[in-house]
Image (cartoon, rainbow, N blue to C red; front, side, top):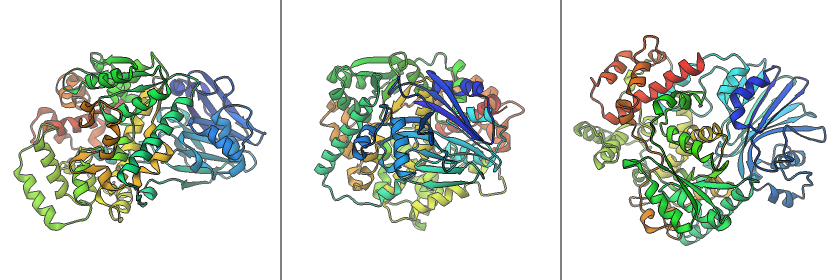
Length: 612
């Protein structure tokens, strides 16, 4: 795993890049300049440690800087009889480019963001993996082009100004939507996309080379038994590749859920001395006891990482600033702590990312498996609106009352608001407190949303497709990339392998949500591997007591930030509304109050500590 940066028609300071991006590549730093092109690479040595130096060159024609791993690169070498001088997957990418030009990305099983400089064509080929696990941001103003693995680094390479439109989207999504960022002329390269940049005239074209929607449009005729066998085989293949593609030891995160449990069970077959790591919070959110059952069953070298959050008040600004942009997801906090502790034991670690979005793991998927809420029905909307008004506010996040309240809220909405209500649900029902900017700040989002919502897919496939493209890409993968890489650790996600991504979407809905059972097929598969106590456990993840933090441990710092006279949020949200939230002078559930305050707090920390 590495960090990359570069520019066309612009110079930048190598030492400043090392200062802001050094955690992604602490082992080696090297740059390469040729005419108006400048490339820089920071290496975290994992594969072919002695010969995988970058920037890497091929025949004086091509130069590459690469962040990521290609797990099947040895298989590809054999398939196409590629003659290499090293065992590095970086060289494999160069050989593929020499053979196929830009038409080889579909062969790769891996996570990647790489840049190939083609001296012959005088152009950059910049590509990103299917799910968007490895980040890539670029600045382009028609005069110069710069890129980097993280926003904090890119900000040091050129002057940037705030782009206000993205902040309105952030208030509704909790993240910056897809390609949008906090800065003018700065774009995130979308998942499954590549750029070709002409270094002579500085023109640029973007191509979407992979889209999960193509695979949701396919229909598998496999029986449940056939699907189970094939999924099991694909998981074995994915996990084996991710264990073997490393010269360093590979361990695994282990929660109390079935995703990481299945990963550990299979990984143990290929790595007898597997190390596993579990977070222990204590109290209601503690998943350590269930994880211990799996560790005991498979005799892993197990470590329980106890997190007390006693230093949270001192650490919170640092944790949030790592993201380089406002970032709402409070589970970034335990993710940071567990990666920090696990790094003391090893550098490469497996996780269960992507399983929920692919196999149907969220409780909100259950109603969509019964009814397509994206198909507008006036009578249902009206009836749901009446029911919602008659229900008292729900304060217990996991209660049946809360579920019914959310369901009524969902059914009473229309268009994009349906998806927002079903998802993070931050400002929904209170969006009138967002200051009108004079333009439709959700217009780009609606354009993408309507393509899926108006398609011929089922309601369940629609919301799962949308979650893959937004929640997974904008939030969960960003969270884990930053949490691991800031600690110089690499996270690997078997559920996001090429073959699984291109098979699971085609399976029938009933294999994913059956009755009230989420992740039905994966639970059936887990019966082969896990203790019975885990099979029907609800989704847990890194859930944390946000409303308790806002009212207790972090109350002082949250109130200090949001009560200041020079607040950034006042350009976007009614200050009177925020004042009433702080004083609890408004009718709102405790959970939603905490969500809104946390969203604004994260934005203020970014503005005062990162941007200014």
